[in-house]
Length: 479
Image (cartoon, rainbow, N blue to C red; front, side):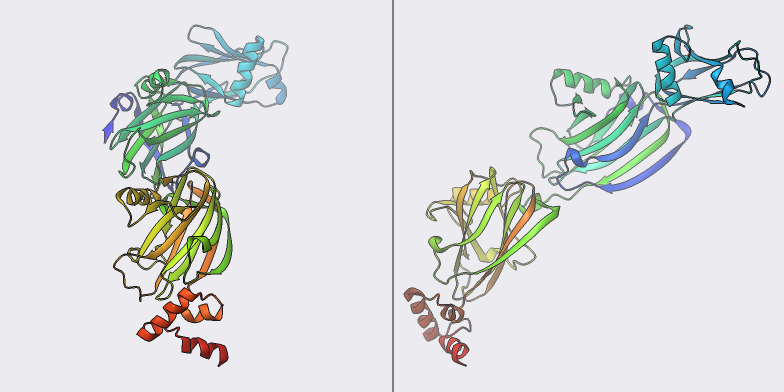
């Protein structure tokens, strides 16, 4: 993996850093709303304590400390609450400038409130804590002051990009002054840093300003950033081949040292370049079913209506069978909303896809849009139709024709099930179970025409019916 060494050389671990490991899995076709939480990124920390050790507090207590940059938290311990009311707490920087003061200016008192809440952010440097009893208080103070900065952390993520996870999203909270990212990947990837409002903070493939901020992010100095919530998105770079799986690891740092490591191994969904592989049902998806008959001598005009479809909302499912008598099936549907159509056989029920020829027509059933055995252009359109990206198409009415492939013995029954999709998700599935007709059940249901009657008699004379002979039909009708 290629790696940026500027960041990793600018930070160092404590002698024995604590390491916590986690494993999880990306959601298929993950979105920013499904980002994985990877914890909190803190700059390094120190713990400062100053105490009068129980003696009478008649003078100020003070303690200097070196901050590595982080949020400082003030905690006091008194024998009585009255003592706290009569004690002044101040925080000075190395130049003697007051940072926080509970009896100071409005700005200093606001900083004091942050100090008490543990959200007062300090730059790297030397600071001094001073606790001074008020002269109006005549009692003794038993006082201990602890100023605690957060333990420094690093966040590490190892994952991969695939055709079914073309982007990985990771949420984290940040407390510090500068943020650093160290990336290693098999090949070039795009990295985007967002703030809590979804605004781009840095982008490796963005505009010139966003790229400059990304350069700071992956530098040894780091990117100056406010404390808050952020999200990192890792995706394929422009024009990358999504069939190539790309492994990557990134580490987030702040400051120059860390003592806690949070490691996340995030598994991606293997690439499936088929249409069905690019689509997923929502957790609350609904299924509606209906039944119908395929007619022996069906045409586009008599096609079974299998319903309507919208991108990222609904899909159409058809289960049926070609038989010796029923060589060709037609299905009509309405594409209400979307810009790409996807078709795929269900591998679980379709025994052998090579048995079938698939044709997509316009609403007239005359203009061939895609054909698995058509012209070169029609075959190319069919390959798009069954791909993860789909075939570009405008909303309208269409007809699907399923027949035996060239060279296949038509005496062999062939079960099939296919789905029609658009988009990457669906919440409604409409399933049509279309009973394949034999000559016998066609006769029983009154679906024989003069043409199909002729075909039936020819099949009987040739001894080639699929078991549904006229004699069988008559026995069924009259016992």
